[in-house]
Length: 318
Image 1 (cartoon, rainbow, N blue to C red):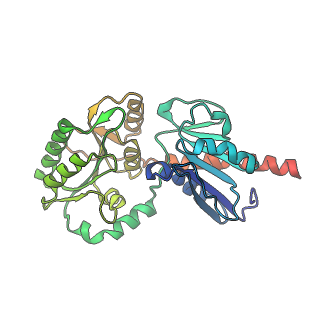
Image 2: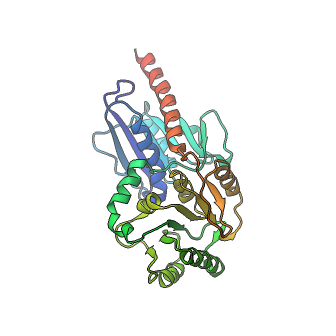
Image 3: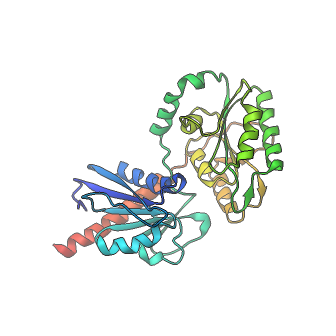
């Protein structure tokens, strides 16, 4: 293993493979890799529904990063197999805090401990290079939307929120008003968007000349939408999309759904305090703020602690 040599570092990303879960661990791994001198190999390790796991061939992890419930019991097993590896978990592992060297928890969860780093939201994969590549890949389609553009990121049902007919009525009215102002819309729905709502928005916006509606079929223009937007609108339940929108430095508006935010009100407050997010009250404004880079900040702290851990191993083994 590389430990402190800087010659080669292997990072395992462990999850059940769901994109929203895996991308948090993968985003942290990629951010750490950008701050490591020397080559880095990132290996995806997927836990299947039946619990079966295929490990990378001829690979031991220097750094093990897990996210999602499926990764939690695997960590204890892997610590016995790879005792020198550094184990990181993204989110709150509930009762298994002692199984990890480091836990990266959302600040709104209010988790504390010597092995806990808190952050606004969760790690993500958005970088300037990712945004530029996304925009370049859809240049023709974006050129067909002249003038000012708004990206609209629509989530769906969660434990606390529902995208119901009342919410949809509100969203359509707000977006129709933007179209009437000459603002082009780049609209995308998510995996959590209920099928009836997905079809409703398709019928409403697909024929609009000033709107580009993406329902998940074909190449994903999500990063292109973020990169090309003058404003970004995000439904309030989608914590990941809110945080990703705030990495751009563009004005971000939160759109309400039916429900109450609970602990996520603290996340909304943090994003508003950062200067990134405001509620949409019917009038567009322009403002600036420092793009949110919590992923990069946390990656740097993870590496600092990992190097302390690796240094201790070196001292112990001579």
